[in-house]
Amino acid sequence: MTPSTVSAVDYHTGGEPFRIVVDVPEIVGTTVAARRITAIDDPAVDGLRRLLCFEPRGHADMYGGFLVPPDDDGAHFGVLFWHKDGFSTACGHGTIALGAWAVSTGRVPADPSGVTDVVIDVPSGRVTARVHSDAGRVSAVEFVNVPSYVLHRDVPVDTSRGPVEADVTYGGALYAQVDARTLGLEVVPGDLDALIALGREVKAALTGTRYAEHPSDRRLSGIYGTVFYTDDGFGDDGNPRQRNVTIFADGQVDRSPCGSGTSARVATLAARGALDADHELIHRSIVDSVFRARIAEAGTTEGHPSVTPVVVGTAYQTGEHVFTVDPDDDLVPGFVLR
Image 1 (cartoon, rainbow, N blue to C red):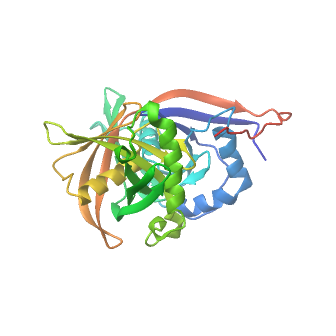
Image 2: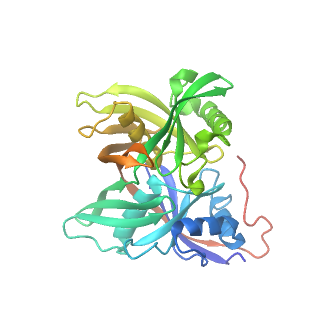
Image 3: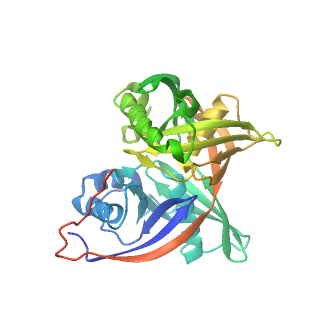
């Protein structure tokens, strides 16, 4: 049954929305990953996602998360990330927003040092939002992600604009990464419609192939998004500078530089020798917001050389809401037009 009222707090990270919902129906599962599978098939939980994501309370590019218990006492809480098409396995911009929210509200007490680790269990594993505060205000959040690694390089993909090559990398979710300029496009608002269409094409072409398989956990399989990037060279400091837009789910557009997508780019650039531990990726979004990302450590994961990325951004509260549901409203839970 749909509740008559739902409370939420909204943030944006680099322009990308994140709607935080604390009071949700009980979701069966011993881990956050298991609860995600339950939520997908639970009409009450999925109905709440639709209510808060679909129009008229949301929109086709809305994003949010339901707070759930952590896997164990080692984390402060867990979260199920959602968008218009379902529940995702990872979300860097959402993790940054949750860190800012947890410290700002006192849910996680601020450390007197000015740096507070908010540990969060997500479907892809355990991540940390390292929150930096100055005079009681959050100034930056570091998203410490799960180990990320390249699965496939230079995968040929046919598109309506001709063949391209994609690197497939795990950064908490699987991302196909394509140089937009090989398609005659730039990461600018004027090319967005074409990028959305091509993002869907690349994802569809790889779906069901071996390139979309996670090496050990089928729950993490599937190309989550297509990252279109352009290379802007290196700054005087030696840091690589790139622009990107991530087209995820079914044509949804990330306004931020995409936290888990940025993690995938860090792993890919490291594997290609374009990023080392002494430099950081300056990653700019289609709306000109910026994440800075670096390699915290290197190792081996699932038999692949991997890196643990740290993505630095900021998040700001945009509102508090009490959504209502009129029992006579025949458009509940809502609709999307894309």
